[in-house]
Image 1 (cartoon, one colour):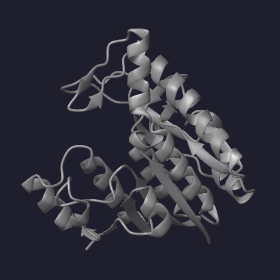
Image 2: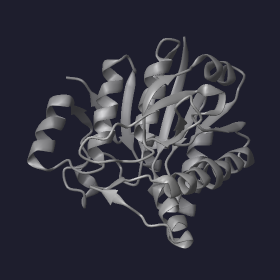
Image 3: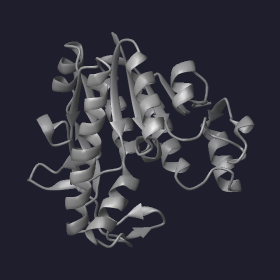
Image 4: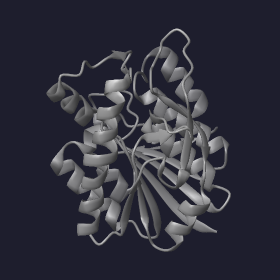
Length: 257
């Protein structure tokens, strides 16, 4: 069984030139099979502002109306994705950029309206791994943007953390998968302003306790939810770290118990 590392890089890393260069240097140095999943929310916000499209969010989650899906597709699948692909090619990594619609890799369903109408936001319904696995075996390095489709011609904005987790879970049948969430901080921290408080290992019960006490909050919660879900479904290892941890190891390792 082949080993595959899936690295999800957050928007804060993607949108800072120096940090992105460091990340791509370290990603390029990873031996063996690998996939990069990226966000780009801050870049999308900048473009929305430039085009005069209102930014709508509820509790930090984007409302993706018709104008917004056009812009985020342009930014995520175009500018951000192809910049990463070009920078990896510069580093002799044979990268290939994807949305979920390409080769029907990730199909989603439009999120149903409950208390909030999120608009053109997709929840992952299925992941097709055969073509993806074949490309990886041939030495290609997929770079996946957070745009999926519903099979009926509709593009959907989809959470990049979830995409990374779903790809990892789908590949466990053929591969030994390591999932790494790489963002600005060195790991999950007891004090977000003190990097010496990184939690080296985190169980699910500890996560829920920290969440209830408010130590873990906001954007870290979906990362951890997705990470623990991946472990339950057979992903070998899940780490949360920054670019330094990607190369040297470290950060926070998730364990079920």
